[in-house]
Image (cartoon, rainbow, N blue to C red; front, side, top):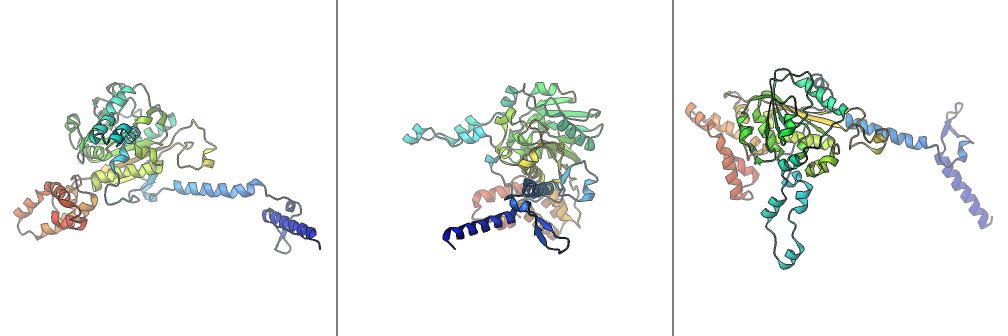
Length: 446
C-alpha cells in the first residue's frame, strides 16, 4: 500500500473515531448493547442541547445549593419568610478581623500615604496626620450636598422590606431609626408610640411622616471601642427602645462596631435590631463616593456575614438569635449569580435585598452561685479593649477566683472591679504584647 493510501485510511479512521465520540448512542432492544445510527454517525458534532444542557443543569444545581438555607426547619417556622442563616450557623474568628482600611472610601485610600513627586525627590515627606485629616470623608457634608438625590427603591424591594418589618414590629412600640431619611419602609398601618430618627439631613427626616422626633448625628463620628460620639444620642438613654432599624446604611459606616454598641445600649432587653441592605450595585451610580471598601470588594453573601460580625464583635453574647434573611424579589438580579441565570432577568429589574437581625439579651442582674460564669459573662458583654477570645479566657478564671473567696464582703468587692479589666489589658498591651504572649495576658489580668 502506497504512503498516500495509508495516510487516507488513517485519516478516515480518525474522522470515524471523532464522529463516534460525538454521535448519540442508541440502545438496541434486542441485544441490550449500543449501536450507532447511520444518520447521526455522519455528524461531527451532536446537537448543542446535548452538550450545553448538562452544563446548564449543573450550574442551576449549584445555584440552588447556594440558596439552601443554613437553618433548622423548626427555626424558620417562627421567623419571617426568607430565613437563610440560622442562629447556630455563624462562625467567627477569635478577634475583630478587619483593619481600618476595610472601612475607608476610595478617595481616602488613594490619598493615604501619597507624597508629591517633588517632595520625594527632595526627601521632604508630608505629615501623615495632616494628609489623613485633609482627605477624611465628611459624612454630614456629603449627604447634605446630595440631599436632593433620592434612593428610590424598586416598589417590589420596598414592599419586601415592609413585609419583613411587619413580622416583628407592633403597634405601640418605640423605634429608633439609624440612617433615617425621607422614607422608612414601615408598614402603612403601623402605629408607633415613638419613632426617633437619627440621620444626616434634617430636611429629609422632616419629610418622613412616621418620624416623631429627629436628630442630625454623624454615625461615623465615634469614640473608639465605646460608641457614637454624641450628647444628643446619649440623652436618648439606655434600655429605651423596643426596636432599632437601620436600612441601607451599613455600606457607609466607618466604625460599624461602635454604631452597633450604641444600638445595643439603646435597646430594651429583648428588643430587636433589624438591618436591611441591598445588593452592592443597587445605587452605586448615585452614592459611589460614599461606599466603603468592604462594600465594594465583597459579594452580597459576604455582606450578610460581615453584617453578622458587627453584631458579634459589638456585644458578643449580649445579642441572641442572630439570623440572616434573603428577602429579594423572585426576579431580582444578584451579584453572585452565574451568567446564564442572569440572562432571563431585566437589567432594570429589582435588586437583591437582605436582612440581618438579632435581639438584645437579658443582663444577669444577680449572682447565681451555681452559675457564676453566666453572671460574669453578661457583665463583660460591653467591656471595651477585650476581644471575645480574651473574655473566654478571663471568665472561667474570674469565676474560680470568686468561688475561692471566703466572705461575702470579699466577693462583693471583686464584682465591683470588673470595670478595671479594660485598663489592665490596655496596660499589658502597651507594656509589650510580644513580651506577654496572649496565653499569659489572661492570667496576668486576673
